[in-house]
Image 1: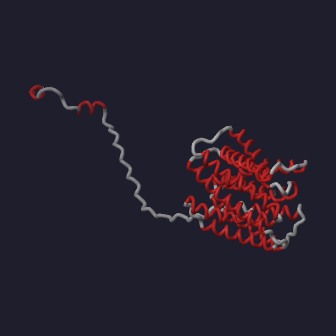
Image 2: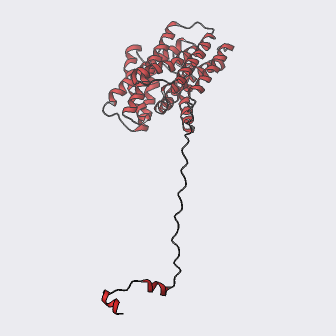
Image 3: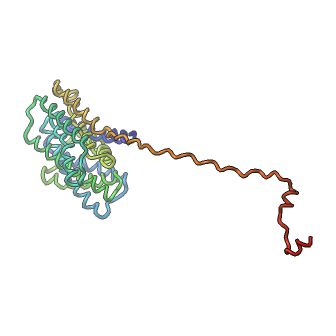
Length: 331
């Protein structure tokens, strides 16, 4: 129980950090360079973790790292950047809260991992909380922003399930596998950025600080925590923990961005937190029936041999004489 709680809290660092991505992107980074922004986020984090891991992929992990780098990093970061620039923090973050149900479906389809009823209920309850939060938003969501956020959700869900499956088949250290994905995704973004957007955008000190925060905190640290959780907790449990992403986004948008937080949104946040607790509560174990066993009688004590109290002389006389029968008769 204590070990699971520790891994749950460690995993929670990731969605809390990701919930701040939307606010930081909106308020510190240039809006017209999403591919460069994704590259500046992924590449430095990947290089840092690779220096810490000091390990390169082997065998099938070269191809796996390339695919996971595309789904979990390259495509995902770019789509999240677009969503963050087109949607309010509250709306952009809560769209990603569909992750529990999407990851549940992907884990069942890809890995044959049948979900427990407790996880399904928690996912549905969490989705209800998301609906409440979205329903309380006053701004009309941008269609392209919603599409980008939904595509990011699908891409990351597939990548996360594949990463969990492959690490079970061929285990490698989490820091190393995370570094490979970030390096692969960052390299792809650095190649695509000049082709799509031209020269890198001009940045000031605020943008540099924003990129540093996104790269070190919401990428290097958050992804290591997240993949550690995936390797030790269930897919649904980790997915529901991801609901802390919209809670963080809503709270930051309210307290720092001046966005509106109504009663309905507050209720939705409470529902989401309840879903996180339900999903990560240990399942109840049925009490094992008490089997009455027949009582065996205690073994009877073996009586000790009585002490022979005859004198030594009597014992000597009791010894049969040796010799032939004729000798005994003559005596």
